[in-house]
Image 1 (cartoon, rainbow, N blue to C red):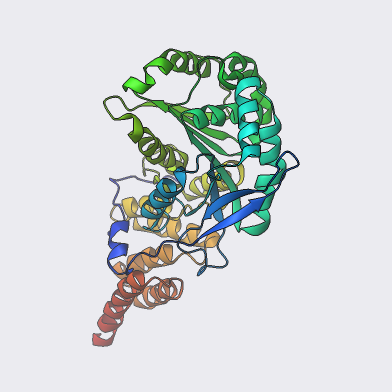
Image 2 (tube, rainbow, N blue to C red; image 1 turned 120 degrees about the vertical axis):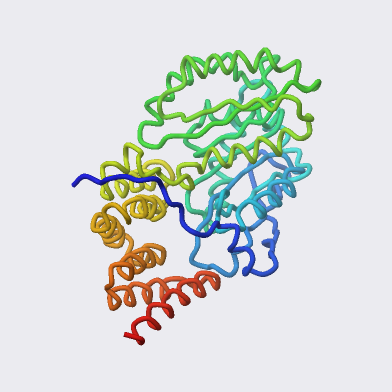
Length: 391
């Protein structure tokens, strides 16, 4: 079946409106996770910043982000709370894990990695820290590692040596000079060797820097790393380099986090245009695309609903029956999608099928617990029922 495409009509209300009825924001709670290691004289007390919905939505599972700088805790938790409170957009709600302010054992592992490329730090993360997080908290399996300056260099060291540990890596203003953690000398061979390790699950990488005074000494090694990524990064490594020239040095972590999060989750939030190569093949192709993202990229369900709706809306005027096929195909895969039920109900109402419209709008209402959408769908249902009563 061919689909005649018209200009895209985006869903009528922006996600920002949802906050108008959501009430005051409630940040999640903070607690400590004690992690032991044979190299430590005392356990390392990692700070865990839980997302706002963690205690109320007990069936929900979450992304995990690790940063080894203790001062990153408030920065990342605050940014996550702000950037996720519009319905996980653009930041999916995330459990933020940050290192203790001082732990001699952890400090020695970091020092050994920086000076010798020693793998004990990665052993600790892989065998102790991540299992402890998984055992206690409801993670969805998608993990991010972020770091600024020296910790940014350790992010790159982790990617090159254990790319499987995290799904995404954010290295802000990384320290690379003086053979830091052997990152530059190892980049070419380990990027080449990475191809087979990322065959079934791609990874994300963002590196960033600026022209601030404090970063001048790192610009040459940064350019060297960038050149090696261009030459040797495997297809399974989706990466980008960002320059935030003209901004202050201490602002880099903020800018890198915001841009990095948008980069990582762009395929989830960016709606496929109706005239895109995928959408032109019809609803089945859209559904397959999001199944592939769910299975091979993120490891959790990514919904095709918004892209199906965009395609359906583009067809409503020129090919309403094809629009109906789009919505019905989507509902065959997503029977509890309130938004797809609503769009199909609206279309049926415009075609004069009041009974079918009523049924779909009732299903839309039954499949949302958000007060804004309950009112929005309820008003649409009342309008249909009022029109039917007058006939």
